[in-house]
Image (cartoon, rainbow, N blue to C red; front, side):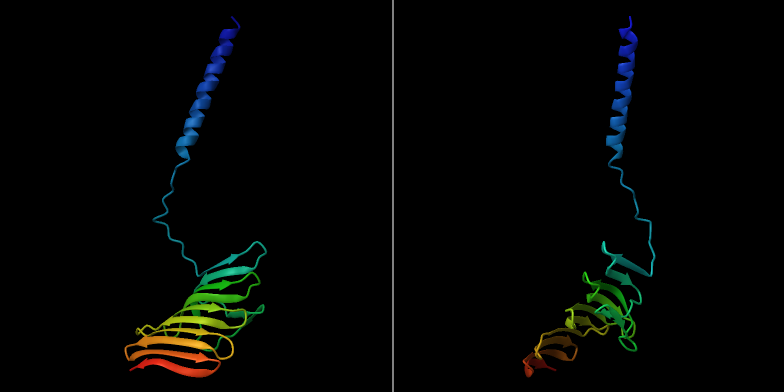
Length: 164
């Protein structure tokens, strides 16, 4: 006689446990719809685990940073977009638009200076420029007026293509 209440309790416990398992499995795949949500911010700063700024996304980005110090870029030099920094907080490049002329830039920087610049003007001209040491550079561009490719090896200029 004493086993009947135990069997009933065990059966009820099994039913409740099975119901909880089904509920958890069914509700694990709930997708929240954020399609109507808009997040508006003027900036976003992403830091690493040590607190060093690694990515800054924003309008009117802070001045350039080199060797731990921010420096003024000059008049009409405000930019908005994405700036990338290395583990020491050194600016290493970015994808930005300038606030003066409307140019858009993609830059890649060494720890010392800018090394690659890809730029498009609002009127349609575009340019790719790469610098090395000792006066080495490549300058490739195009506009409505023509195209050009200049190469400089150890400071010695060689205009390979120029059509206007």
